[in-house]
Image (cartoon, rainbow, N blue to C red; front, side):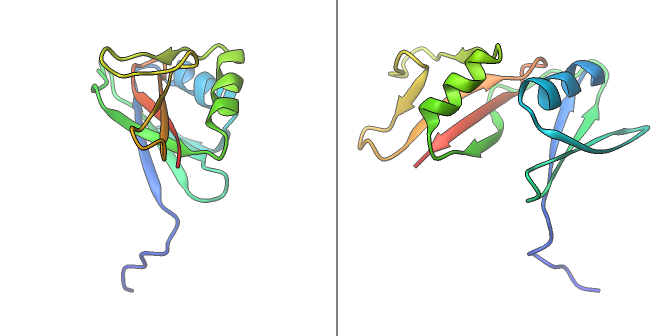
Length: 127
């Protein structure tokens, strides 16, 4: 068998608390649980792939985005998340609007950041 680059991708997410992470991804964000095993959970990525949520005791998130979504209406997506209790992250030195959305200098791209309960930086982007 050979490598198939068209196979469904699997992203990896890490958390210190499984129940808290699942409540956020499946509850707050509205993603669907695909399957679980003793070592972690697979979250469905809208039928386009899976995210493997793995618990690492004492896990500490990094400072950079580790997962994101390309959206067609970033302002609407941000408003929806805020209504669900998500807090957008604001960065010193980034000119973000009232919703926390940064627009590239040429106006072609917009990005917003937020964190999961473990501090993993997540993003929304619209190009």
